[in-house]
Length: 263
Image 1 (tube, rainbow, N blue to C red):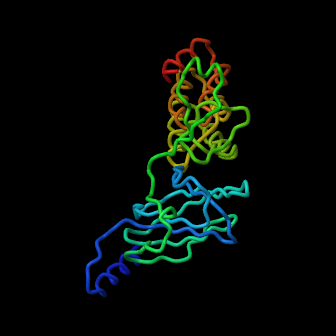
Image 2 (tube, one colour):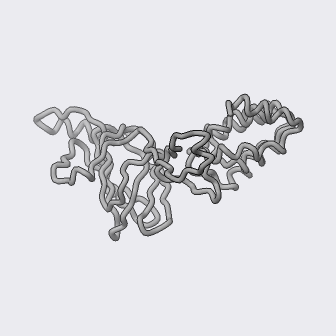
Image 3 (tube, rainbow, N blue to C red):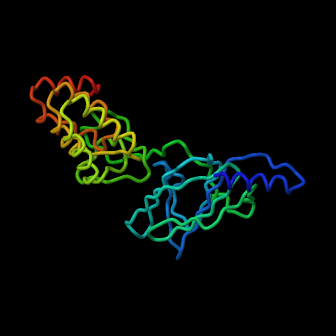
């Protein structure tokens, strides 16, 4: 970071004019003509597959998570990047399994020769994907179209309900958390451990089945309710809430949970 700032100062001092500070640009090109789509922080940046794209006006000195899918391949790249500073253009090459930073250019970058459709401003607003397959029951209950706020997300077999987050963690991570919980005796301390684990896990997202598995480490129904209340926004298949009912000691505890969640 210090070196980058020195380079920027040198750039400004060696020119005869002042370049107004601006946000950064990310330029992506594919290797071997791979057509791709890019999401940044789970937010789709464009709609159509392309072999070249520039995302402009993105804030520097921040971490971002790339999610890249391909037109003719089911493999998805999930890779973090760091935008080093403001007024910098970073060039990336997309390979079949990874993204490689090739170079950085400090100062203003011109896109005059670019196709305007290949230069997009960084989007901080999720792209809504309309689900046009509505059942008769859906129409009677709610006439509005369900929207999924993610361009790319895990497709759970036989699940068409509400999606709270796009990519559930692997079971290995849940086992890691369970081991931490098993070392504790008090439910209150276990709740804090879960919260700390969530805060320290990038893109924390779990399934209802994984949530049910975590519930087995808690004794009291009231702390189980507290646990689910905290985890629910990070659950992928939120409409599978009924899966949790058998894990409560008392039947009215599940009714209390639904009341707490407003469902």
